[in-house]
Length: 116
Image 1: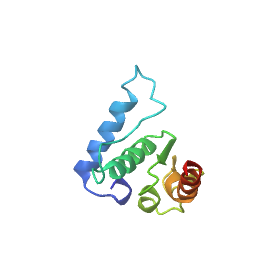
Image 2 (image 1 turned 180 degrees about the vertical axis):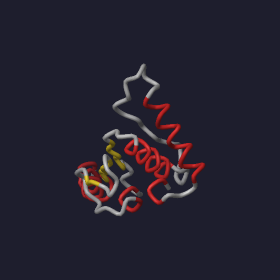
Image 3 (image 1 turned 90 degrees about the horizontal axis):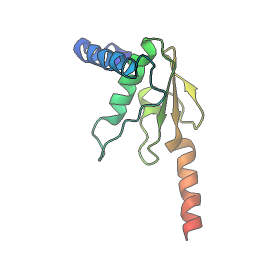
Image 4 (image 1 turned 45 degrees about the vertical axis):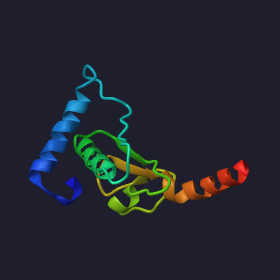
């Protein structure tokens, strides 16, 4: 992973991807990027973490939102407390919101009660 210094070739690939994303919209960086897939364990969290780090390293203020209510991972990746408010990481320009752990379970339980 980029924050650990990991594999140079992989790190460079994420930097190239982030640069391409920044210049893909006629010079104006996109305000929102969504990473998703059809199933579990396909690398979404790893991709989000590395792309977020690469964008932050380029000086872009970056907020990662882990919206997986059942299996959130980003709080573990960045070693931050699970919280439904932005939490700064050790990396400059990078914050994380983990809606799954802090509020998701309570909200899911309340939703199930309302359905019954």
